[in-house]
Image (cartoon, rainbow, N blue to C red; front, side, top):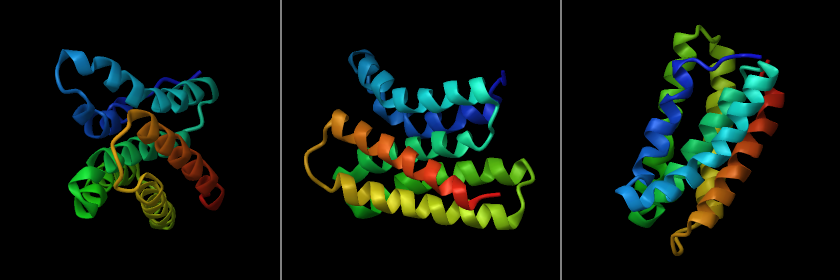
Length: 147
């Protein structure tokens, strides 16, 4: 079994923290973090560090969807903030440029797909979480392109 390091705390701090808006929003925060917990548990069980990508993209999609009501730029900015943090961690881990380019490309597709799937319609935690789950599964599929 593997133990997650500090880097596993970064995506939820950026991506899920905006979900918490007072005490009554704790359930909303926990629901928003739940899809990421799946990837965290899977990482602990398997030790596969690549799952950090799926975990991070779930939070990027969460923030992109959460900020969709503010417009397209805000939505893209939200997802990009988590992606930037993810890439900074990966650079710090010494990931090769070729791997970083693939991760960046897949992350861009994941955020674009998340924004398209979520749209600018009414906000719904269920809808946002569903998009986040689909985004993390798309990121998982993108791992096939990473060595």
